[in-house]
Amino acid sequence: MGQSRSIDDILKDRLTATQAIAQANTEQLRLNQKASGIMVLDLKDERDGVANSDHEAARTRNAAALQDNLDKINRLEKELSLLDEELAAAVKKDS
Image (cartoon, one colour):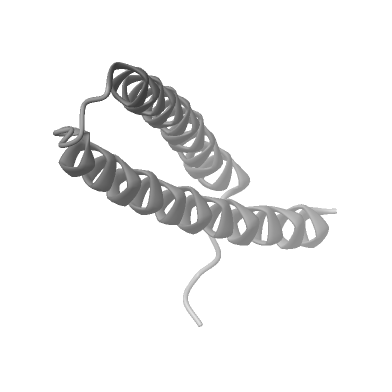
């Protein structure tokens, strides 16, 4: 195995991963809000008797974006977990 990284390098990568998770969570919230908005439009169309709504394509795109972003969050959280393990090992080695 290669030379172990410094605690500072691990912490920098951990901060980057944490920021990326925060951004992805913000995006997930935005996409969830968009999904709610589409649902409101669907309810309005139903109330107004609109039979052929054009919201299906938007709903499909948004659902795909939600899943892609959730996959990204899961990947980033795994990365963070690995960095935490690396950090724990580095701290143990230094003590």
